[in-house]
Image (cartoon, rainbow, N blue to C red; front, side, top):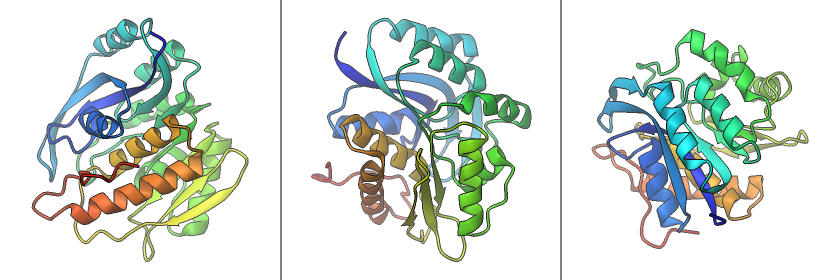
Length: 257
């Protein structure tokens, strides 16, 4: 098939607050055709993860093999994934840029998806990734740097870019004290800092939501900074509609851009 598509790779969240179900919801709202590869299943509510079961790597690879000959994949959005699967994706779709949200833990920090040995295996797979989008904890785990302020955030982003070989880095710092902020380090070294709103309560899936809308913008031809601004605006609107008893993000009618 000659039609351009996005390939979404990630876990199954039954609340549709993250992973491939959220990607499917958002890409359909933007009228973007996408295909999906499932890597694992979470047992969770909108408030916490109780369990996680990864699919056998052979089964995930089989999904990729079945799709690869039939679709023109021009962008890949990845969340929960093992190092072996990430390597296979890059082999199968070597021309497609990858946006990778390295999901290492649940949002509460209580559940670990990628243990230390797998994390070490992941690091060599990052070279050449178009955009890496870790949160503060993930950026620290990947880089070995501690983040406590804007300067250490910049230092961490440079480590990920220069040492790991990532082309562009977005560190989402919604938990940074006293002033939450996101930092984008582009391929040519330009740094842009974006304010991040303070959440009055924990909202489920903000990273997944941001990545999916960002991917949609890039897929539709926006440059990276412009796609990020658009994604952050869309995310902030969705956060305003969330409530403490239903913290799953959704778009209001007419909010597609």
